[in-house]
Every structure is written in structure tokens, then in C-alpha cells.
Image 1 (cartoon, rainbow, N blue to C red):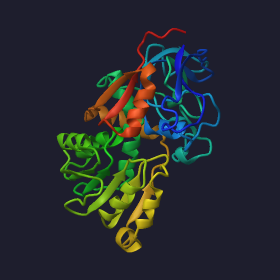
Image 2: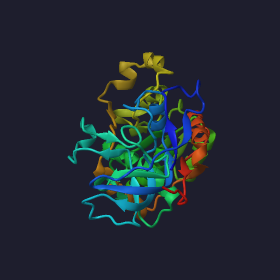
Image 3: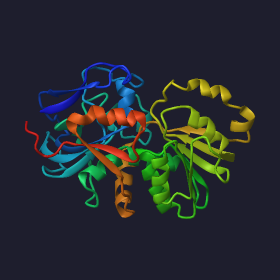
Image 4: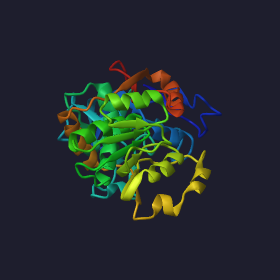
Length: 341
């Protein structure tokens, strides 16, 4: 089968094509696992963290990708609730303990980092960590819901927002553009304020119903009750804290932060940014429950992901453009149903 494979850790600045298109042996499902023919796989910033070593895979080579949609074409021993032909999705959580805090467990395994992921024609996944895809979504629409949408849902829960509270989103890529739609549905009286460096992203935010959109460094018209940061860098964190009202909460929705602007933290003022019971909460991974709860809700709204598609062989280009932050919405690899074992 064809797959895009990571064979070494390197910065995209030094190695602009870090993935290699290869023919690799097809996977075989073990007990309790599904064999999935992949049709679409989202491109997530966490792939950049893996490639550049901030959350490096424990073994190389590895096939990245954890926003996976496809059809079940085989089942391992003991699988009962899923059938061949079912359309399923797989997210960042490959398997864990099944406990409410399984995202924090040492047993947590990540799809596309600890085990092979969806930048391939076929993959395997535990049936208990594979999710039915609602009919409301095409394969390419559903792919970013498996991480960008579901982890955004978790981040929104962690804000402890009440309807009528003022919400901010800093960074407006794959996750935030879905969180905006989700927040408008769950908290219709809560104006959403978007901070983004890219003009196209600010325009999309306003089109999707944001009450205000400005540059990352701007002040919102009013101080906000909660802000979700989805950026890979530190500068937006400092500016977000300056936009919080007393008692406000900043939720950082990122697996890792880059060090490129870490010195900006020296501008952090305890009085201006942290005092008066402002707090910071991080998002760590995701649970099975998050995805299982989120997908039916996304269909009921319904969420409308803005997607740019790429062929599997163009994964490196998609990653470079993601690194540059040059497009709004989500990026998805289309792999199709033509793969052969």
C-alpha cells in the first residue's frame, strides 16, 4: 500500500519535504481491531510537532495522521459492534485506559505517533476507539472533526463558559473555526471575539458570525471571560492574558509550543496579565468520550468545516502551508477508495 512515511526528525526549514511516499506492507488487524481503508485524513499542527521533534515518535519510521475517515474492510477477532462496510473515524487517541482521565494516563497511545496513522491507504485501530461518522458529513468534512473539532470541544468545555459570557479565540485555523460555530450554537448569547494575524482568517471569522475580529496584538472592545489559544507560539498567550477580565480563564489548546518566540514571555507582567485570579488551563490530549459526544453534536448543529484538500502525495506541501499559516480552515488529504492491499 502507499503511505507517506516519516523517517527522520528535522525542521521544515531545513528539510521542506520530511515525508517520503513509499510502498509499505499493509497492516493486519489484531484482536479487537479494525482494518480501515482510508479515504481522507486531516493535516494537524501536531504532525509538525512530531516531525520537528517537539513530540517525537518513540520509533521511526512511522506513518503520521490522526484525523482519519474510512471504511472498515476487515475485523480482528472479538469485534462485534462494527461491521465490514461501516464508515468510521479515528482520532488522536489510539487507545488508553478507558477511564475519565485516560487522556492523562501513561497508557495513552497516540495515532500517527506511537502507532501508524492515516497518511496511508490502510490502517488499523481498536474498535473501541473508532467512531461512526454521521451522514451529515462527507469524508473530507468529517476528517477535521476527529481532532480539530473534538479537541476544540474539549477546550470549550474547559473554559467553563456560561451563556452570555464573552469568549475569545486566538489563532483561527482548523480548530478555532469549528469552535466558533460550536460556541454560537451552545452559547447563543455569548459574543465571540477572534484574534488572528492573517486577514483571510479574520474575514472568515466574521463570515462565520464572530462579533469582532482583530490582529493577535489588538485589544478586544471589552475584556473577556474566557479565551482559547490554538496557536503554536507564545506571543498570543501574553496578548490573550491582557484581554482577560479579572477571574478570567485562558485555555491553551496545543500539544506543544515552539521556542521561536519564547523570549516574548519576558514581557509577562504579574500585575497586568495574571493578578486578580486570572488563570491558565492547558488541554492535554483527548478522551474517547470527547469524540463520541462531539460527533453527534456536530451533526445536529450542523458544523460546516472549511476544507482545503490535497492528494496523499502532496502531504509535504500541505504541511509547509500549515507551517506558514497561509490558509484559513482545515487541510485534508484525500486518499480515496482506490487503495489495494
